[in-house]
Amino acid sequence: MAIMEHTVNIPAREAGSYKISIGTGILDSLWAKIEADFAGCNKFVVTDENLVSAGHLGRLLGRCEVPTYIISPAGEPSKSIDTLISIIETMEKAYLGRDTIVVGLGGGTVGDIAGFAASTFKRGVPVVHIPTTTVAQADSAIGGKTGVDSTMSKNAFGAFWHPAAVYIDVAALATLDERQYRAGLVESVKHAVIADSDYFAFIEENIEAILARDNAVLEKIADCNCRIKGGVVETDPNEQNMRRMLNYGHTIGHAVESASGYELLHGEAVAIGIIGAGLIEIEVGLAKDGRLDRIRQILEKLGVPLELPQDLTENKLIDLIKRDKKAVNRWPKFVLTSRIGQVYCPNDQWAVDVERPIVGKVLRKLL
Ligand code: GLY
Image 1 (cartoon, rainbow, N blue to C red):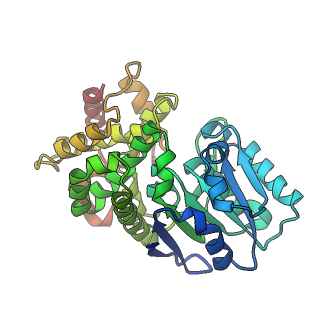
Image 2 (tube, rainbow, N blue to C red):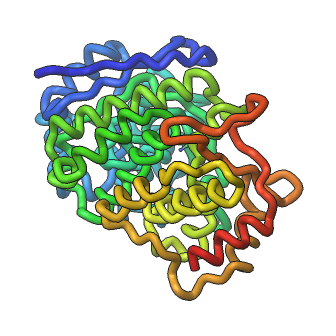
């Protein structure tokens, strides 16, 4: 079975680097690899009820008996400090110590919780991620962002905790619900827009195969995502500057996601945010090449909604943008592109000032 590998060099990590392995159908033999890669460590699995019912936990563990925490219900409502406490106490009951490695099997929520649990258990143990959704394989499993929500905001508790390894089985996407599958692909489109015009053209040419979940094409997609995101994270692991480019489409996107009461999936809100960023680029004179039309066509083929929910207002969105966690003096900077595959980066700044009236004008166009 062919496995592609990327190495992400994270200088801040004691180990210095971690490997991302990509393949089709690797889940069935993965446990033996994890045992070999992390020999001498106790293992503790964090997953959720969807992964159990889809059969992925069974495929991973086979007959091996491994202490496991199954998050229930699956999804954002369980991404809480209560779940974190429950996981830590389950680990304690299993007599686990600092020689433990946490294995997160699942989507973005599982990965965020598993990583944060690992970062806090007995002052920190390693985590490995086995992402099983389009958003987790493209984005959240790579880069070390972990956390849980407070009752007031997302990821209010969190830490950068870079993984010790990431294992991506694109065949695991076969069981993913269609809406989640399509929404998660928006992060792949984002990577192409900000960093690689050839990758963008590949997505354009292969959109039907992507939607049909063709494993060979999905391996190429995973490979490009890991190369792009791994490269950015290597340069700026803790988001001091360059990593901000990964927030393309996210400033408006986060506001839309929150204003929808999380009715919109993250990727769906980011798709609207990407259109918003493209409209800003036109307003400030950065886009004269029709790139927004190409981006819009891909997003339309993905079938994600590109218009704002009816009950949103410009004022509500502006208020949420002012609360963006990266805002300074109540206004965030925006990531923009100078062409497909290239972020606009004057004076080594990966996010730039955009005046409020321009953002207001763009929001009115989206409403
Ligand atoms: N999802 C953006 C980042 O990992 O920085």
